[in-house]
Length: 70
Image (tube, rainbow, N blue to C red; front, side, top):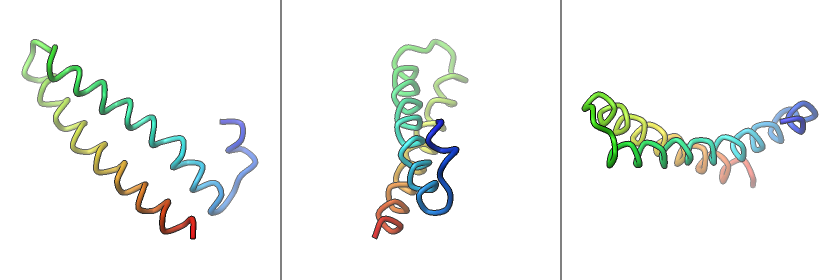
């Protein structure tokens, strides 16, 4: 996180994506685990929502990184 303090502009944006992608991937992994282990349907529904949203955001950030890294 300290590195982000020194970055601005496109370099900041790329580093932000690099930091957020594994964070989102971790959320997806936890949600998938919850789908198979949770008892309450509310947790299963939330997990499905998290997986859908976070996977879409991971793809979006990957697309941006490709576009902005040229």
